[in-house]
Image (tube, rainbow, N blue to C red; front, side, top):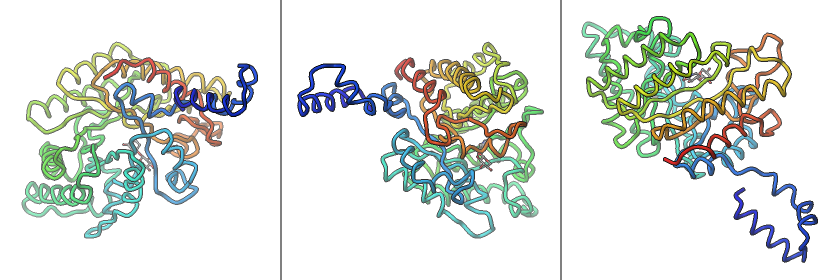
Length: 380
Ligand code: XIL
């Protein structure tokens, strides 16, 4: 709630009750005073979008946040942009050959648009064998693989982009195509068939079939030690995209903080050099999947929360110093729906606390850190 609204409620109540003493008033209004300004409003004041991933999976599962009415209310209260956690991926849209299923993705997209939020798309081409459906991995590209590969990618991207015409403002066209171990483009049936052109075709098709949409390259290289090869590989890729005029508008920094098991071995200088180079090439920036992996942090909740909040504030202060950064999205808003509960469970069996809200939907220090960083950020 913003202060002008607070003031008018206060004035109204004062008038109604005839209360003039501030002490009496303060005790009459604790609930109003405690409710924080929505993150989307703090973001909007600085020309930013704020949002979250949401999943249309089975109710009660990690990917089923959308089925929880409280979660939907929280999204409406805090966000002005949403992204589907899995529903726009090929393994949902085209899990079987010759059969498109847009139903779960449409449920999320319609919810966002009907509630005045923007929708991001994630992702048209996750060029990684672990996340391509079996029928695609087995696909026979025939005697002219480069031609058939291009036809396949163009057809898929055309179908998806036509389905969402004008409704998705920003697409992660290619996701995670750099192998963190080698810094090279990952091998997949598409790169085997087409080489680098697999990536080029994906962006050209997206530009053609989703004109006016922000086109993003998205990856997870972190600012912690151990990410050097991954960062260098991403830089080389972004340079090549520029040199070859591949149509890309922005770089999506996933921002899964602490995903290498530590949140404290940060390479501030190297990270700054990395981001400087990227904005120097003319790319805008987005934080697309913010969360904090606390797998190796102390069990004590106060300590854990404080450490997570501190690293979030440090990270956001730095990233927000770039006017090129246009949006901040969390990978989920409530701890018990976080993918990290399954992907990176704690050794002590206690649940992770990677997001801004706890399981009871109470705001946590990570949320305060995001709010404080937005308040301190320069306008863009
Ligand atoms: C994850 C989802 O959260 C999981 O539900 C799913 O099983 C696997 O994918 N980087 C990405 C996201 O680009 O798509 C991933 O989402 C998290 C890491």
